[in-house]
Image (cartoon, rainbow, N blue to C red; front, top):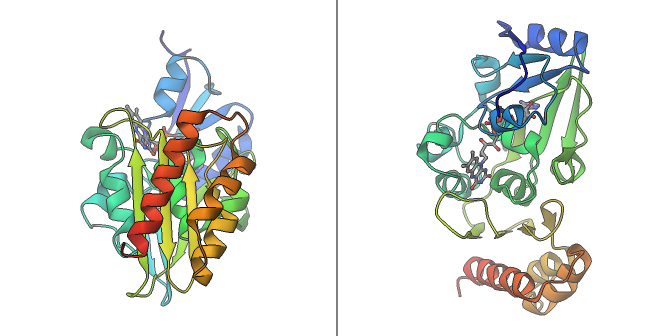
Length: 270
Ligand SMILES: Cc1cc2nc3c(=O)[nH]c(=O)nc-3n(C[C@H](O)[C@H](O)[C@H](O)COP(=O)(O)OP(=O)(O)OC[C@H]3O[C@@H](n4cnc5c(N)ncnc54)[C@H](O)[C@@H]3O)c2cc1C
């Protein structure tokens, strides 16, 4: 199937892109890397009267050192993290994540902002940014708001982005050198989305996150608390999963238990 005919705009600045989106909020789609949007257009499953191309906006590729935090533009590609062009406030976690997304051709185009906006429940960046406690910076014409990843991710392919809003980037606290991280992805073949993805960050702040187990990436609350306080985190996994998984599936449940257990083991140095 081919997309319906559409108009195409490539605004020269972020302000122009925001103005275009404000004017055509009901009928326009942003395109960044196009790795998810183009298939959706071909299936005629995305608004497509106007495609607004933000892939060349340098403002979306900004990297700013904010002292204890880093600002990373939404237009940075997976390959930029893989290649070390973008800094990694997660002590190597972001680089490892990027390396494991799809395959190189997709990583050269796909962006961190596009991945989060797409909100695939099994995607890598939403889970990792949630584990890192990232804050998304969102802009619409004349307004800006800051939203935690927990509030941005709503459900399967669903975020709390308003119509016409653009993710401009993410602020991420730099992990202290002593913090440990783990990323355990199980997928059916190389380059595919995760069937189960467990991410753990353990240091001053501790978060254990699972993706692929529900409609969106989630923090395992009791497991994270137990890990933070030195209690038996493994014993809490089952209870957390029961709250997250709507349809109990013995194989998938055991798979998630396994990836989470391995992630916890890694951050504990076991
Ligand atoms: C074969 C294949 C394998 C893949 N494997 C994986 C994988 O293993 N793990 C994984 O995580 N992902 C995977 N992906 C998805 C890939 O990472 C995409 O790059 C990503 O999901 C979308 O990023 P994009 O920049 O291409 O966004 P686009 O396709 O351009 O856009 C996606 C959506 O986000 C919106 N959007 C884009 N940028 C912004 C922004 N700044 N603000 C607001 N809205 C925005 C668009 O309007 C659109 O709705 C795979 C994709 C393919 C095709």
